[in-house]
Length: 218
Image (cartoon, rainbow, N blue to C red; front, side, top):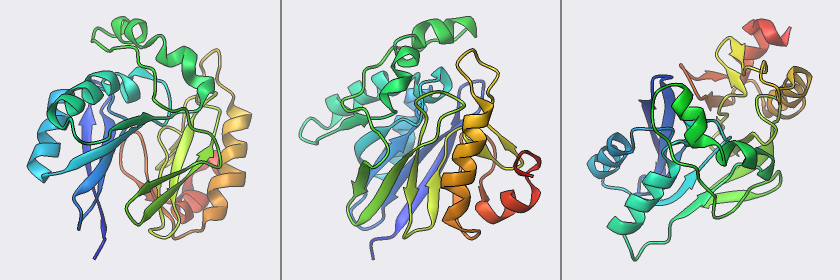
């Protein structure tokens, strides 16, 4: 059975949920939002016995992308025969990825600027064996924020768009609260009440629970 499995590793002082997803039969997987502590992420990959095919980014903040360059470099050295792609977010977050070192330095930890192998945009798909993830553009927290939606597994990786009981911050110079709420309302809520999601910080939830209880969506 090609079941989708997952593990969450909270990284950085911001306790960002770096997520590893893999196909249980093939042991091939991908890492979403490696914000820091690449050694811990690598140790988890080793413990699980996985071959990582992709590193995926939801957006360009340092707590989500700060270790992407280091992790990609390490994985390519360790598995030189495997194809590893670093993909996402939408190109509208390039200014943030170009500034990761400076972002992190403000908070007293290290990060490396990174250039993805491929920018992603709404309508793109990511496949992991039989598992397919659709890319949706959900701006507001950052201009180029994207999410990854697996409709058959009823699972979404939402980064910092929607949380249990909250939504992503928009008090940045480039933030747009109206755009964020519009993306949640028009793209995420229609996924259905039973749709589960993992988010960038804290516990996951379901679309139905947030529709009923999230004060930002009333």
